[in-house]
Image (tube, rainbow over all chains, first blue to last red; front, side, top):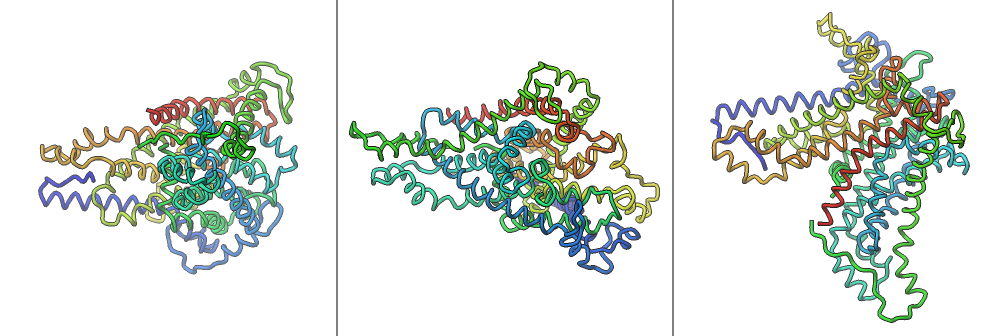
Length: 293
Length: 308
């Protein structure tokens, strides 16, 4: 605790409290404003958007823009809304998150409990891989996916996300298992337990929190990815973020801001939902990715 | 952090080992090998491949005859590339300093035994959960010159208010700063708040007893103690600034003209739409060098500290 403002007199202390609270409330409103505008716009009609005020509540709220964004809006040449792309993202995210998490857990286990000469170098190389600008691997990856017939496929994107997510998942589990007491592992070894048995029976049961952190981190990153999606997929195979960008930046026809906003909310919903449900773990994942323990 | 000496690989008690035993000792390496191999090939191999391409004359497709630094000469003679570097400097400096300043400011406010902390924290942090494309879309609408903020201000009676940064060549880059700061400053706040909570309260109490004013306590004692957090925040933000791509594409598309070109958008358009693969590769190599210069010393010191 680093609370201040205790020795000052009661009157000025109260003024200070009022200033602090009003500053925080104003700041909170500023942070909420874009979300508020996004939501209210999505419930308005186009006429109301053009004639009215961005900050005003919808006079006659309707789900019209939402249904249109979901199933009728034109993206590229097809006019079937974003639902197909939403499912693309789901089909991409689920396997990519699971595979990278399982591999990360096993890697972290080996790198902490079954160390071998050079384990630091191996970890260092995998860790640096988290930070490279992906522009430095885009061209070769496009070529390789093409050669293996995986260009413009969900399988190809799953592979890409697993490859470039491994560094982070390994980092999370390694730091977590580092603190896990070695005595338990040793005792299990003396009892004759093998590599997988120790992992399965001793480490995994106590890995709950780090599994949640890793899954949330990977889910958010992969769902929100745009660069890989736009580089390695196109048309009906695109993930949600790419479709949203195509919808919003298309210059043909009437600009339907309400539909754009509804589509943006659809794209934001899964990660916002995860954040609201498990915000604590979300922040922990971000911090673990930022501050190497 | 306590580091107990690592568990040694099971030492064999008998000189002759059966096949299963040998497999047992190799198993950990077999488990790790695929991930490591993948990293070596798809990260380091691909980086070398990109570096190689930057020494060729590749245009729409890769060609593999080396021509030396040709692509780098062409890269550094592109006005577009200078624009990208200049924009990255503007964006990077403002993004990092504003995120840090605002993040620290909110964290200090939040650390004053605020009653509604549980309610306020998620409000400052939720933008971080959004995709940059969503952020770009939202701010593009919010800052829309005809219907957005400008019109709202007119409705409020401020008739002369003019806000056309999105379509103003000189100002467009600042809209990216605004949206970027909105998205990441809450996260920096969380980092600083965690740092503030880790400070020993006794030191501050002692200073208060000595009669030091609040402002001085923060400036002289608390903020200097947050040095590691400043460093972490800088690394994260610098890294995000260099990689920023989605936000620019969604908010301005790199325009108007090339007003918001960044190295990331430059690389993409030269490689995939302008058929200048060698120049695109060269720009990617430049980006990699930039990030390496920031990350490697940081990772090196982080990994070293643990050893001691």
